[in-house]
Image 1 (cartoon, one colour):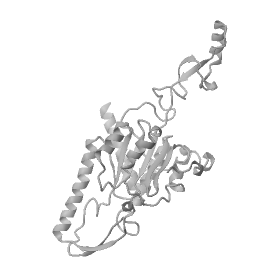
Image 2 (image 1 turned 135 degrees about the vertical axis):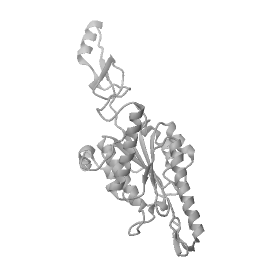
Image 3 (image 1 turned 135 degrees about the horizontal axis):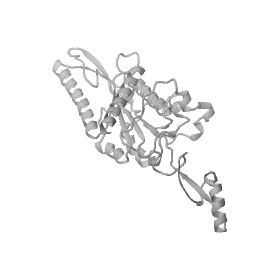
Image 4 (image 1 turned 90 degrees about the horizontal axis):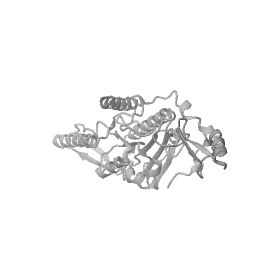
Length: 326
């Protein structure tokens, strides 16, 4: 169920994305593949559209805007042909990067809230989402979001004027953690229902803990669309990327789906096996993403400075790879 358009504030209420985010920390959006188009006015696209660079002229066709008419050329052609003829200018399109956030709203993503000393995964996801939004607005991009909630899909189409509102006071600010599917599963829904709003070259940031590895076909489906998919892996370094030695201690364990609490006492061997299994799960995830050509951002902290550092490293690695291909 899409969020109603009427809830999106006017540009005057939100302010321009570029100026409002000028003082916010951002990271550069480095595209993995060369695509047609760039940020507004930065580079010209290979396709025709609205822009400033004229590529040529042609006769008017129904549906063309009157603002594209070359009145001087039209007058000369009309005088030479003895009939009313209109000539329009064709321009190279100037395109903005599109940035889509896929947010994980499963109950497991609400684990370890403050004051627990471990990673607050919900806070880490919010920090990552805010940074992505700010960086998209800073690049004059169109920012949108999609998530699977307990009451169905929630979608905000990419737009320039409401990116920060999504996180501050819009639907993403207070959405519950009640989804039954992960953010990676949302790739299939995005492809099925909103493909036209996510053209090739769009950045798709998938935020999740990926503790249940998504089907490889989902990644391949997104790559076939030539989306620039960026997995944002949010895992607690103590309990999920590893496992502490809690042998001989009775510990309460909670089921995030039901909230039921079960007490258990693990032996040293069981704790060691659990740590090995968690480490292998993390290594397998990173290895699989690398094999598919995906560059993950690994988050082990909810501190905004740590989140910024992780995304900055991601961008620098992409810049290095781009320089190597040049």
